[in-house]
Image (cartoon, rainbow, N blue to C red; front, side, top):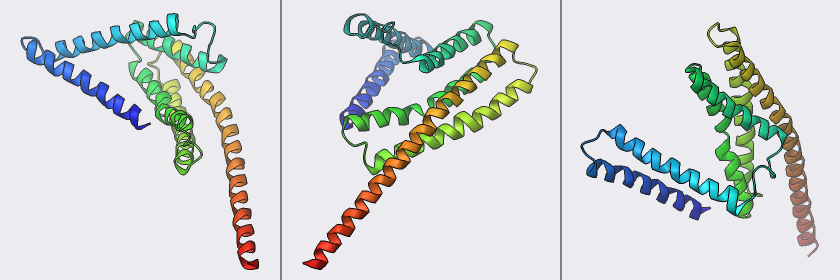
Length: 211
């Protein structure tokens, strides 16, 4: 985990250094010009790396999809972004949906890293899981529902934009069902673990008393 954090900070430092070097070497151009050069190089590099992963290293994305619900979520997200860019409107709704969709992603990835390093069944793992569930419910269900209501009653967004918002919110409820099931399993597992620890403490106390 620490190695990944160090690597991420190193990459950030390299991109920032690249930008500052461009500003010095290419000083006759504006800051935005040099920033977009960095973005261009970053985009080309990202395409090359992901292309290598998909076509050479594997797995092939068309034969190993993430599942129908997640695939629908990503498909609608991509179509929504393309639609707002093409229309040149409803950008704020698209940004809000992306914000609400991705705000729980860091916790989800942290959970995966904790599992890989054998630290998931710890206090930190419980904190990450609880934070994920609470943040999902607040942002995707309550805040998302409020935003959807404002979008539906507003005359400005187009009809198909509103339909897309309804579809994304419906998907959030599909995810919510899975999260509720996960929370129930997690709660039962936690209570079982606490019960086993309590029985172990009681047994140890009985043994000490007999000794």
